[in-house]
Image (cartoon, rainbow, N blue to C red; front, side):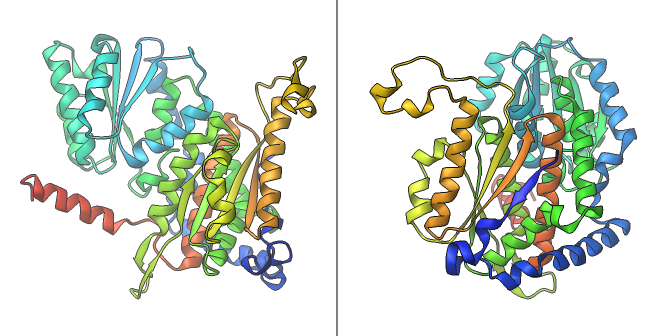
Amino acid sequence: MTVTLDISNLAAARVGAHGLADEELARLDARVLALRGRLATEAAQGNHAYLGLPQDDEALERVLRLAQSRMGKFRDLVVLGIGGSALGLRAVVNALAQPGDAANLHIVDSTDPWLFADVLARIDLKQSLFIVISKSGGTIETVAALGFFVERLNKAGLALHDHLIAVTDPDNGPLRGFAQAHDLETAEIPPSVGGRFSVLTAAGLLPAALLNIDITSLLRGAGVARQVCLGSDPRADWPARLGLCAMDLYRLGKTCMVFMPYSARLRELAHWFVQLWDESLGKESFVDGRKVHAGQTVIPAVGPTDQHAQMQLFLDGPNDKLLLFVRVQRHDSDFRLGTFDWSDFDAGYVQGRSLGEVIDSQLVGTAQACTQKGRANATLSLPAVDAAGMGELIMGLQVATTIAGMTLGVNAYDQPAVELGKQLSRRMLGGK
């Protein structure tokens, strides 16, 4: 089984004027095929390089060699990285890591002094492996963390080669130079793969492998999504359908998308998707240079938790949101609710039910409530939260973002405003 997408609650027939007309939905398959053709052509020309990651056996073997020689030798794994160098890893680890399986993970993704102090207090330098991740090799937050912890390693008399691995561009950048100068082991982020699309490169795979996560299955699942996007029946091409429908609804005034998995294990996936979607689509100009100030803002939520926090706004507030629910069809751990005084709590209906049934009914009920309120909503169904399923979901959401960028007419791979902020911050600190 693979990921599926139910878009029936996007239809105007169900949600009224805030949904898609029958004629728009009828044209969806033809539009999917047209965009798929463009995606394949451009990929063959060297664009959309992340699509090739599931087939990069050499990179996978390199990561596995680096990880296997270090498995079980360190108590703490400290990742120095920010943005795409941290968010994707958080999503994978939160979904797939098993407690007690491997080293303790610490991620330094800020220049907040408290975070530095907290991590330093929690780790034993002698039993720590650091992975510094920066494609450009000069991200200031990551460089600050690198300098801070290298100083501590040096003072402790610990060889950098034994405690530090660099993940960066294969040829260029100051981190590559630092690694060569200190004889560090390295892994590569392909130059043509952008940071927010890099979770399936060594940036995400190496730390995941060191945490005993099955990265081979993760890539195999990503390969399934790649095939779905390039060679399946267009009705099964959920990434393209999601990208197209989201942009059609954006033009109807849905300037926000709520991404709401009904799984605590997918909480960090929502935050990863925020960067992927927002940074890819939030642009001042179309690709032809015309000013547009486009973008659809992702609001992360987790069900059923946020039914008690944000759902009031989603149902009764401005009707400017597309709600995307993520359902888990099979839960690894499930428990049946047995004997208890359920009737005293007016909850006799849950007796004998499993918790999986309860959370699934909460998702379905919320989707129905949205539909009755005229709120466009769709549901992604994930067979299980396992490595293959996560790989398929991650790759599919990346393709959906690319398709949305094509449909909107913006460059999904640059981030000029972010670069401007970095330049101004450097100048404030005395840099050029």
